[in-house]
Length: 225
Length: 225
Image (cartoon, rainbow over all chains, first blue to last red; front, side):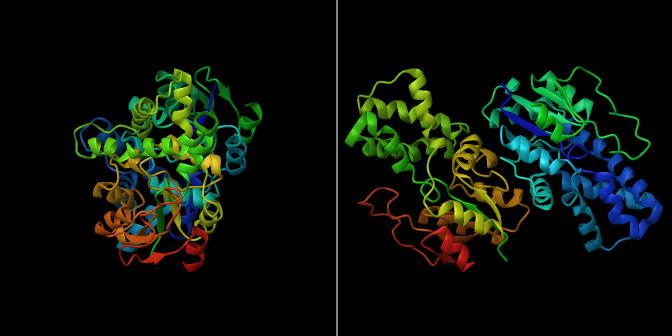
């Protein structure tokens, strides 16, 4: 019955915090992971301006850059324009969790696969090249014109895949993403990523609803399906 | 300087006429190829209604189905609804030219690759699965919201790839597609397909302008680049 899997990316497929902290560590030392957290903390509010209609659709790279400048202010970090441009693209070269590449390859044998991320198309292309993933298509905010968790985002993804909503399964490490997908009629799979936010993580450690599938990794999800 | 190649699909990558005629041959015999031609002849006029703004954006599968019903009338062909639905999806299972799969694999080592077709997203996904191609993203009419040769179609493709127009090369077997791409500032490569329209083909046998590259196959284009 399920014919396509669509994936959250930041946190679910890649370790954004660890990847960004590793890149900033030579420059920031102990402040590298807090910098990554602070940068990411500005992510939802920036998208909320678009979701609410206060701001026209703006690709995530642009929002990331604005948030980066604000975070640099907070951390008294000074960089040249080319250093800023380069650092902003760290989101294009995040590293996958250890199971991601093999899990996607296994799932691809039986299902259509697409990222359904708030990242822009080129960001998702670059992550796939960096990590050796193969997608059937790039879906997500820039393709659908809507940031998750707006319902139009999930509905439009199913429409582009020419599938009924119930034939599409959202795979995510975040309960709120799955709740929004389920409200639209999609199937749901929860893959907890207990160190997405570092050792002291308190959210999204456990499923908060009876998602259709819960698995500790994509390879175990593939085995279950 | 060229960082991405975007491809016309019908005619350039796949033999639509031969594939459709082969599928219809048991039912239509000698009339199978003429039926494919007649169905295809309704393609440009149907898109023109959308390009001109007389009709809102409509995915190609829908236009193909309307054109199929009209062509069936012309050929006095009667089919059940499920036979019509199935035949309309023949465009999702067209066969690539002999060089397409190997050529795309070679080109993928050095360039980002995406189809830039008037086919809808799911059609292009299915063609890739059917023929064993790997794309970085699915571009084209349904992703950009514009049918070729509208300039917005090419411009939006480059924008989604985060590239300058001159960093993107349009690859096509059709001089008019390349002319429209060049007018937008894209680079151009012509791959003649002298039997796209059958043995008596008279158009697009030769380049009609000094396209940046001309090659008899995708594998030879890969060797040249």
